[in-house]
Structure formats: C-alpha cells, structure tokens
Image 1 (spheres, rainbow, N blue to C red):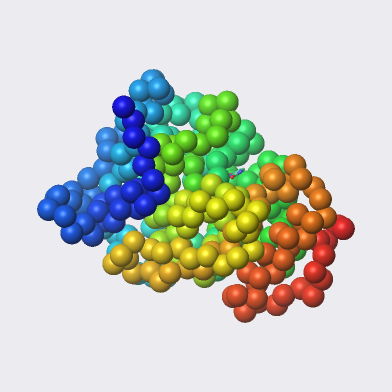
Image 2 (cartoon, rainbow, N blue to C red; image 1 turned 90 degrees about the vertical axis):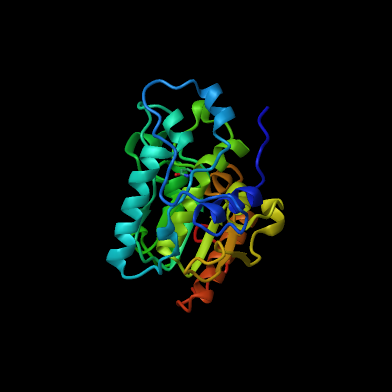
Amino acid sequence: MTVPLTVHAVLARFDRAIGLDVSPRSVSGHAVAPPVVGHVDVAAQRTAVVAAPELPRSSHAPAGSREDRHARLAEIAARHAATCQLCAAAGGTRQLVFGEGAPDAEIMFVGEVPGEAEERVGRPFVGPAGEKLDEMIRAMGLTRADVYIASVLKSRLPGDRAPSAEDIAACGPYLLEQVLAVQPRVIVTLGGPATKWICGIDSGISRIRGTWQTWTPPAGAACPSIPVMPTYHPSYVLRTYTRQVRTEVWSDLRAVLARIGRAVPTRTTPSEA
Ligand code: URA
C-alpha cells in the first residue's frame, strides 16, 4: 500500500539525503535512483515514486558566483532528467520544463505544474498563465531575464490532472535544490500547492496570500532562510478576473519590491482596472 508522504517527511528525506541524518542509517552521498528508460507503467510508478531521490552533498556549498549558480543549475537539470521518477514515468514523449531565468535572481517565482504550452517548448509559463505572469513581472519594472521561474513539478501530468502527494514527493526535491542554487532574496509562490511545498503550510491560498512566510533550508545548507510571498496563481487570476483578485496580486508584488528595496510603483490598483 502506498503511504503518502507529508511535506515534512519529504524534507526529512531531503536532509538525510544531503548527509544530515542523525539516525544510524547510512547515507550514500551522490547515489541516485537509476534512470527509468523506455515505457513505464505509470500506475506501478505511482507506488514506487514516494521515495524521494537522494540529493547530493553539493547542496551544502555556498551559492557562489553567477557562473557557479548557472553550473549548479545545469547539473541539477541533467540529474533531474536522468533520475526523477515522476518525469521518467512521463516517458520520452514529454518535454521536461526545468525552469529558467537569472541564476542569481533576486526574485524566484514558483508555479505548480507545466501545461500543454510549456511542454511543447520546454519552458515554464509560456501559455496564457505565462502571459499573465509576464504582465505581472513587467508591472514590477522587471523582465523575465531578471527573475528565475520554476514549478514544483517539471513535466505535464497525464490529462492535466492535479498533482498527487506522490508526484510532489518525487519531483519536488529538485525544486528545493534549485532554490539552494539560486538563493533568491524572495520567493513568490504562485498558488496553494507551491506555497504548501515551499513553506510546509496547508492554508488556503486566499487566506495566506499577502502574508510573509519563510522557506527554511535544510539544516546545514549554506543558505539563509528566504522570505516567501504567497500569491494567486496566474491561471486563477485569469479564471477569476475580478478587480479584487488583481488588486490583491498587485499588492503582493508591491510588497515584494519593497522587501528587496526596489522602487515600488505608487499605483495601488491593477494596471488595466
Ligand atoms: N503553470 C505552472 O504552474 N507552471 C508552468 O510552467 C505553467 C503553468
């Protein structure tokens, strides 16, 4: 029987995997689950997938220069492609969507799961939700090249179903490695699932948005805690295109700009009211 892991159980695995376990269990350093090739029975994978991958000791290293961060992200992407049990289960027909942006970005946006448009080109947030996210970033006086964008899951799910706890347990740890590599000054979580995975908090997004939360790195990692601003997912904004929702998102983004000491536009209403 499959026992869904809680976020904290997975984070504990993450700690163990980077050598922070105080239990007698041995740690295998760089050992990773073998890549899954060819056709995979997705149902069978669902039962196997709860074991989060072992993560490397390089997660202990300080972020370093922009080039160091870039190299680290490239290494994580390659290892993810070879070893993520969820994305391997998606099979060779699906393009992975690892994430993109400035390796030393001050702001990291975290979404949930790629959709059809993202899968087609292998880039995050390029469909309708991506256009909305671009608009949000532009309104902040920034471009996509200034920020880093990733999602909790890195492949589209069959039938665009909602991610399960097992999906997140399998693929989510690679996002934590991305956070450790980029070490942004602020993380903006887009929607409830991303907020839950990053902060370990299971509050409804409408309750928690606009309130500062914290991403706590695994103990021993050379990374400070990072403030997190949860806001609505751009898909939700598109579905619920009310002035109130757009004003709330804009307020959250203005708070992010203030937090990192950037100029905050005086306008308090959304751009196209
Ligand atoms: N929604 C997400 O959460 N991530 C993407 O990459 C695209 C849409």
